[in-house]
Image (cartoon, rainbow, N blue to C red):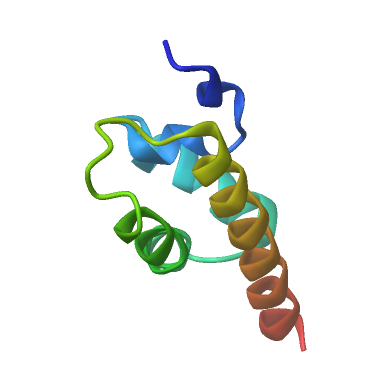
Length: 81
């Protein structure tokens, strides 16, 4: 199992994505679709730079994690406001 699976969000790259997205949606008071769409929106530009890679590098996963958490927090605050 790749080391980046220790990431809180790396499971969104697996077949467990819906289960994890449901939990994140509850944590951030968002819809599951918002969580999944936001992850794709955040991850795509980072992964596009490493198209030749067969696995997501730890560095790329860290970038995705940081940006995704920021985006979820921002969305959550907008929804509350």
